[in-house]
Length: 225
Image (cartoon, rainbow, N blue to C red; front, side):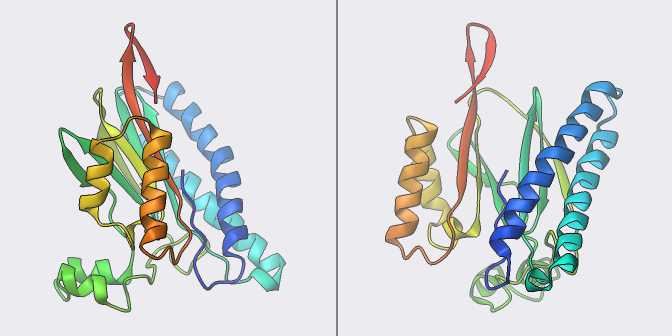
């Protein structure tokens, strides 16, 4: 999971840490729902994941109310859960999830920003949105004024590469460069270090967080790398 404290807001670091702590606890309960519920009832698991995000939101809001110094703290939360042969993506905010497969890079998540909402409504073009002052204004955040968890089910296959990242990476490193790096990766650690350096070389003006992993088949078993 990736939680990126909202830039410029008091307590962003505290909010992201709190979101990770509470998400770990509540998502563990959601996994129990998955294994104890009807295997064919994906809707119940998706609801459990959404509820986990809303409980994280409530926890952050409660802590903020208890300490006025952190009353505006907020964070993104993007979580990838693999339960072979499926994976589930839970997202609040604009930290992204990418999938690389068959030499193709796909941004599966959708940025929950005001600019992206305007693109969907046809008010702005994609190019205009990238330059818009609304590009970094979240329409949904844990601890924010609005919280809209989105859960996406994903069919997994061997060889897929999965990447979670904060916008500190994507504001400096274009998708073409990310694709190039993932295509030539030799290990998750190596590609993360290379992408981190790319972002730093391009300015590194924001927190840079990224996680890369893939499912590989070894002796008929499932393993991660």
